[in-house]
Length: 529
Image (cartoon, rainbow, N blue to C red; front, side, top):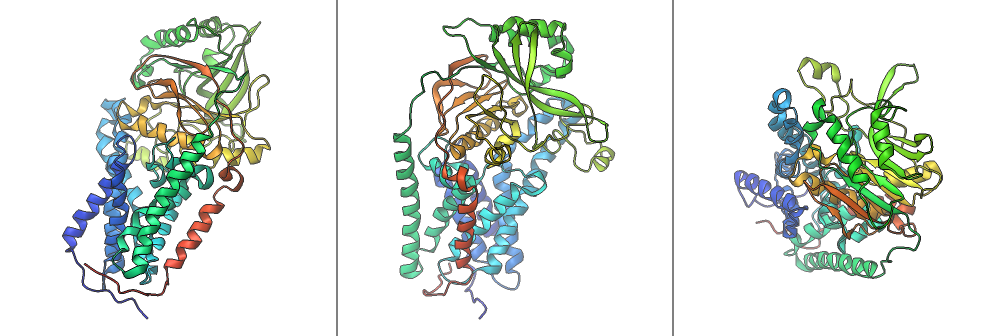
């Protein structure tokens, strides 16, 4: 029998206003704000989608969900305006359009989730499960369709390194999103008899379980291991616009070399520079005999290793010239600098590092943000990088740290597990607002999921040494706009996590559980307000 619903409580205009409020609440639950009561915004979105009626219930559910998403992504992605100010003369006009258009596009996933839920929902309280599953599934799609853009997943609202965030070691960021959504939606059916009260109790149990499991896991956290490599992270506070001024090139090199050579109580085994540290190609500034190569070699001790990001030239299968965004591992040998390892970025930033539909974009006068030739091409799928004398590492360049499972997939394709993640990033693009703080939180979830420490280097902040629980090691952080170094041992890796072994299989099981909400029998009177 078709579902019969009572009269809609709020008027459509009020519903739309509540949709915007729901999106804002969910957005401000994310770091750096951390207003966790805002997670109830997801529950309010469920309520609004659930209270649509014929003849336009699907259209209304989609629009309300889309409005929630628009409000959410305008707040979460406000930092997108910052990259366009680097070349404000040519690109500044695009900033507000970029934020609004991206928010509107991302919100389509949320609108579709609300419409799918409304199409499948039965009358029982398990429809809260169905909504959580629909949202989580479309968040997974947002992270994969057209290269994906999984920024600020619902499950990443919990501060990385906190007790609730530790569940990502079991079920990953998408599974934690499902749990978070269930907890946020279940209380909204509390008025529907005893099943509603059980549902609300389930929400309390989920939150309590996240806290108890995370607290117990963190209580077992080991300290540093004897003989761990000593790491130096260099943050030179070089603003993005400075990299396009050739008059500042020598001073940028001088900053990095001076910080690298800064005396300390213990010599670092590994020095890490950020993505795009030196604004030139590897072939140019690391060339034997170049003054830059001499300067960098002079800052390193014999046999010391430098990890840095930059771009390099290559050729595709047809021999056509291409450019890669790369990480290089360089060692100071007797003959000078020697490149002993290379990694080419696999996940590129749309419109930043490559231009989708470049023919149309060129006619519209839209240019990529990174002014390097015709943009970058992706490298092969990630896999751990083995360099003699160093722990096996998994490089993640900037945007790649958003993607759950990328390190796990690399370990399987490479046939070996990394001992640490090195995340070089160019957060100078984000300015000094919420963007770098959000990026740090998201990246730290990759450490939790894999049970691996992460060393993170950015040119303007936030650089940090992060342990395998997603926590910043005390005193091992350089904030936005700071210039300096971080010295310390590499934190230990943990045994492979459940997520490392099973990947998104638990998340798939959660989605199957959610399907029970599609035709759950109505055992209590449906309450409409």
